[in-house]
Image 1 (tube, rainbow, N blue to C red):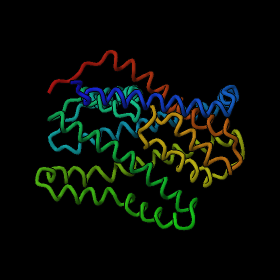
Image 2 (cartoon, rainbow, N blue to C red):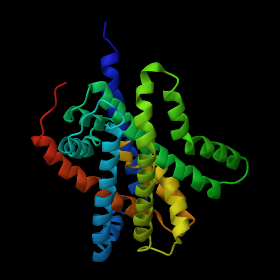
Image 3 (spheres, rainbow, N blue to C red):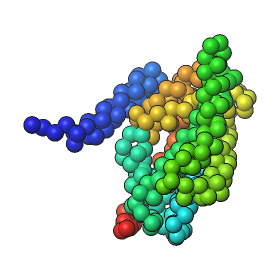
Length: 293
């Protein structure tokens, strides 16, 4: 009898790859890829330089948050070189499996008191990333949605915005997790603040990109791209590809942007924030050695 469990992971992986391809095919069936490419190639030099520098800053923030996440474990002894190496390795790994879960492989390249402790730190890092994305999206929803939906958005915003606080309370409920409370109390506010700051930089990037195609107030860009960015937290495509572009087409339509302009905006930032750093991280991955516990 064939065991189904070993087949499930590759099956879901294949399905997510197919979904990514299908969504992208549907998008580019509606718009000309050459129009998207032209929009990207026509970006002014000053904006390209800004996107490079601001993306470097965003990655420095994420590196710092990975460092703080590791420090949640009171038994962790820091090696900054290992932290940087493992962070860079995680960048290309997120492309291997739709949803980015393969990036947890970076825990194999950092010394810690245990593999489980590193996995906890990875989970904490991802949780704060998702928290910032959802907080911005739900805050934007308070202005974008109306009627009965507004009530649910308000409730969701209240719950999610306070999530770091009730997570601290959960640690206190279990004896084994109480050892994490001191580290969490010290590092969580820093992680949350940096995560929100990084999100603000991202929205400034989006606003400046969108301004190359049309006129849009900063607040409108912040609101619509916050809702668009929610797609990144839905783990059904490779690095959010396709789903994010579909969201952008929808939320930017009544702001005066056609589908090609919306897709160009998301792909532009994807190139500078994800593709180029991922290539750099791939070279680090080829030369790195796994840690033994």
